[in-house]
Length: 145
Image (cartoon, rainbow, N blue to C red; front, side, top):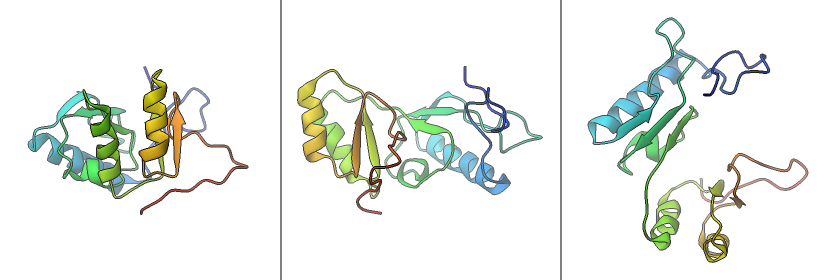
């Protein structure tokens, strides 16, 4: 279980959203996705009404690509989880995005890793780690917006 709270507390995994407006926007975008057929697998709302910026880590699935939570930068603890049976469709789905900072690929299949490095339109591909990982003395950037 992830602990949501004060980022100054070493035990905190997920800090607050930047402001109440960000919390409201995140709730609206999740509601929009659910209305369009998405499912909330975990989270989906602030932990309490009294502190809306403490937002529960959220997992969504079946999110339409047109939903803002999928097509814009949420800056919230939200992840979209989708199944694919064809790796070429994974590559195509990532490349359809107007963003291209980094991609995290979890795989033991070296053919998939090579394809990701060769075909993904992103600034970096991180294998078997989260895409927020970076080495501060190395260039960090993306392609697209």
